[in-house]
Image (cartoon, rainbow, N blue to C red; front, side, top):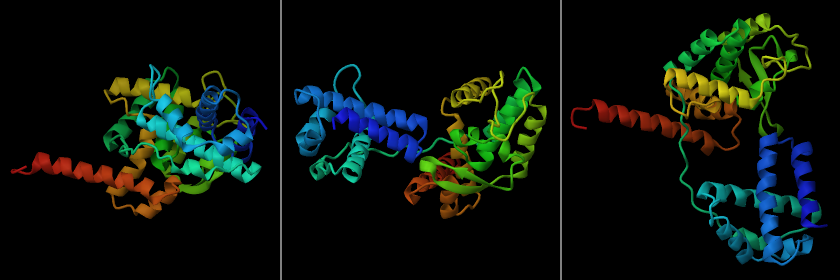
Length: 303
């Protein structure tokens, strides 16, 4: 098989079998397609299974060096992501097609400093909810926006998880089963305030919320998209003077950080967020420690 055919098979596997989100599939395809395009020039022809199996570490290093050059040069984090995509592709090739190349494991990506999450504050979360309800041009849209923000903050959902809810999910239960990344399921408690906000929106919504139809609707009745949710947060943070980090995902960060600040157990928060690794959840502990240090430096007379 040609490399292009193997790439197409892998992308179908990610999309149809592993049910990765569309944005994730697109990013994987873009990164590996760029790698294969480089190999076609580097090797003097389109690579196939044999070329992929016999590729040398120096060839992969040459690609990573190539991506650091020119006006479209990638930063360290993007280089690391591209390398992770290539390794995922090779794991698939070995499992499904017997195309193995252990030597490429010798190639190391750049060492990254983990970026700390940037949650919104408790006051900002409340302001976002009230501003969303009060500034929309139609009552039902204000109720929808307030319900969505409340749900993201109260349950720590990813925006894609919230927008994947359908009419069959209402009225929201006290414990909601959510399909997260890679189809992994988790159960998250839904606070009464979030359930009530969603029901208020549903009662005002002019469109029939059928069981097989999206719960959150756009103005013309179609599904509310992640892009629309991003635009909503951009408008709200502009009105409230919040930083650009106040995105839908910052509400998920706030959910975890505020739970931890109020005595939440790290393992329990890991389960609520659906993190594979505890180290991912531990970044929220770093956020809280940083906040405590800032308070100390501001308040202590000898700081």
